Length: 75
Image (cartoon, rainbow, N blue to C red; front, side):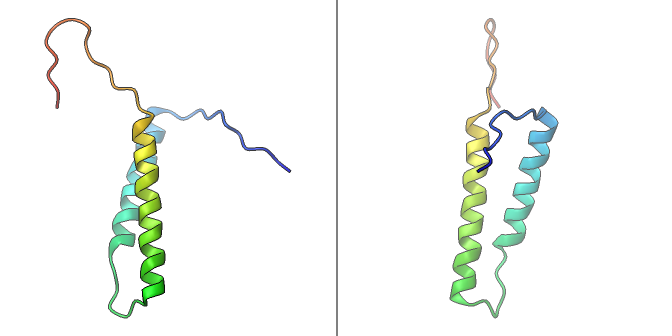
């Protein structure tokens, strides 16, 4: 059985592109149609929930820097 590669080499630009693509996919999948069945709605909502979870996990892995001296102005 093959093993997963757990060492990724992604740049900041790569991560930004992934986040933008996930946000676009969430936007597209959030729209419901008139003739949507309950099962397809649940599948769509599950998919959107998983994408939001992935965005959250990506955010949690970021390291935010704060200046060591001077006044910190958050934004």
